[in-house]
Image (cartoon, rainbow, N blue to C red; front, side):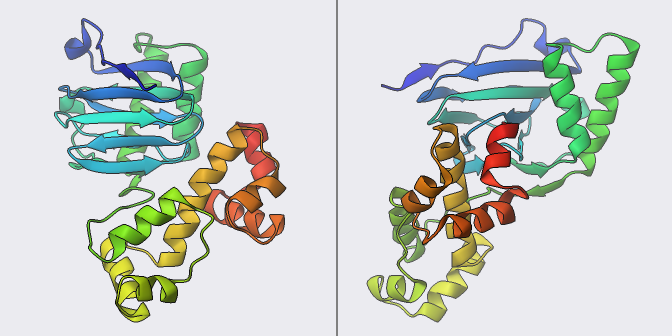
Length: 258
């Protein structure tokens, strides 16, 4: 059964320049659609965060926070238990940040500051030192490279059924040429649509899909060998190579760090 939650902001939220929230959500929890006058940078500590922002779906692994501009209606759903760190930024301090919801490729400095604040359960920066630290955090966010969803989607009549089938069965190793036959087109046409509609190749999209599922399987305590079988890889080494390409580390090191 899905647990539905309503977002409740601090009473003095609109008077604050910056404030933090730290939350833990159970598996199968949905935050109902809402909006507010401040922007948010949302970090998920483990598993995968799925959000709808102004009707657009954004998926992200733990290392890429989601940016939600002020006034944008959004909702979230997490399949597994998740820990969130949210940086809330007053609208007048959001100048220079993207006008559209997106993922942010932030520096290790950003992650270090967020983790330090979370460890101290800092809610509102008040000391001179914390205010200065948070100004560094804002500067780093302004420098971050933005990108759209880690796993983009499309309503394209040829691509949409292919992507839906793969999301339902990530282990499916059907080739692009075979998919093209099923949707009555050519491999070349389908390949071009992947680049134009998704901004990446078919193989890259499928690899990202499997990476997101691999994170979830790691959280469940599955072995690398079992993960490889569940995700359609012929060997554990093939899965490890994919995981390193996407995250820069091995599955076991990722699990230990998490």
